Amino acid sequence: MRKIFIVLVFILNCFILNADLQYILNAKKNYQIYSGDNKEKIFNAVRYINNNYSKEKIKAKNIYSTSKIDLYLENDLKVEDKELKNILLETMRVYDMEEYLFGKLEGKLILLIMDINGGFSGDKPYMQGYSVLDGIVNEEKNIIFLAYINGWENIDSVINTIAHELQ
Image 1 (cartoon, rainbow, N blue to C red):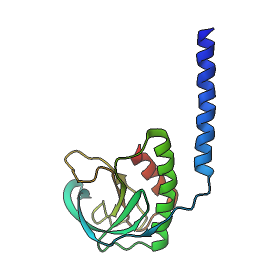
Image 2 (cartoon, rainbow, N blue to C red; image 1 turned 180 degrees about the vertical axis):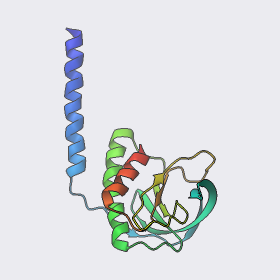
Image 3 (tube, helix red, strand yellow; image 1 turned 135 degrees about the vertical axis):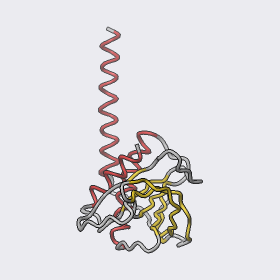
Image 4 (cartoon, helix red, strand yellow; image 1 turned 90 degrees about the vertical axis):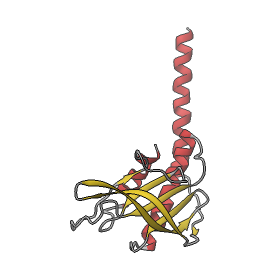
């Protein structure tokens, strides 16, 4: 009898969790995006150059912010404002879900958009990202490094990468 009760409680909790997640994913929220302070910051990062990983210092500026996320763009990298805002809006939705499932992050999440592949010369868009690598230390704990090379094929590949790195 006790086992049946535990199974029923477990199933009920699954339904409640699913309903809450559906609410988070489908809720129409008006996320406030504002211009960043545009201050340059130096990040320790890794590039993949000539089949080797290279630790480098990346200079980037805070382009946009929300209450939970700061978006930095590597200097001299050009990305359409509309794309950056779209990425930030979708990341906020993913962030809300991750926060519900795993709890709040300590401090703000930083999205650093950079050329990870250090000179990739293909003609198609290329998506790559990472969040933690041995030997790479920054004062901020919550950084997701995203590649922007020849554009992004679609926003879903970017958001899937961000969601993967948040886990």
